[in-house]
Amino acid sequence: MQTAIMSSTSFPAVDKEREFRNALGRYATGIAVVTLKTQTGDLLGLTVNSFNSVSLAPPLVVWSLAATSSARAAFEASEYYAINVLAADQEALSQRFASRRENRFDGLALETGLGGAPLLPGSCARFQCRNAIRHAGGDHIVFIGEVEHFDYGEGEPLIYFSGAYRRLAA
Image 1 (tube, one colour):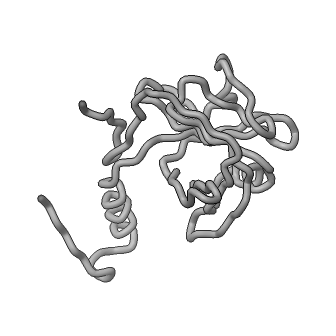
Image 2: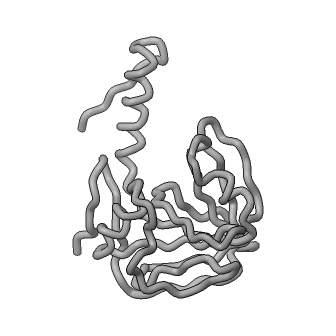
């Protein structure tokens, strides 16, 4: 096992940020696509791996968005959004919503959730959330959603670890 403990003054800030990111990458996460319908009726979605549970009572979940994201204003203004936890066979969908593609929803069969938020069929789990709390958190905005409806299936999740997509082993 490789272990490195470094003080905050042992390398330049740029290297420190990269090394911190590498360390965070050692924690396996699921992949989700967060979606909403904007106030002007447009559909918006993006890939995140910052999704987690917060509370069972009330049911709360958390995810974060870069403060510089062009989607920030739409997510801050929305009353509802959906978090679609991707299945192992949805890597292409993750890449689609992580890209700069103009209309990421083209050609997708969608269901409609609370507030018109798009729901992606085939996802492992889907959480329809009221946009309850937002906090500035360094270079990100932290969103805490109150889950008003959810559903889930039996499929395996898409995993992200050390900068690459992974699948669960039996």
